[in-house]
Length: 154
Image: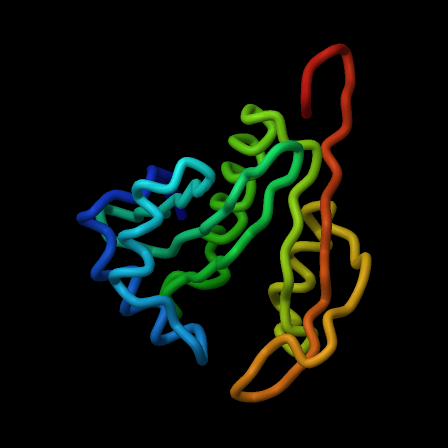
């Protein structure tokens, strides 16, 4: 399946707030998502398939670091490449903005996500005890370092 990756705009907010409710026990509200439109460190991307919102990724780039706040895909678009396309674009954008690495937290019980991140070069570097609520669960901290080769970021 082919996905167009675009910057989040006001027109995406409602669908993304609904997606948050489906995917997360403590979802971001429409207002919380909307606030990121004017945040210079926030870089939120939306995956579209045939004009329909398939998913999104939210990242924050500060100095040489990129942090992924959320990755979410609507159930009927899962396992079709949306998350991978979003992560690839987020990595490319972060490198272009000068980031040297990208990090995220993920529930260890979310095995498909852990496998996807590992397949894309993310490594487990630590654990945050009791990070998640409803249900309470630790978080794996996963990071991918961007290498320098031939004078340009990869």
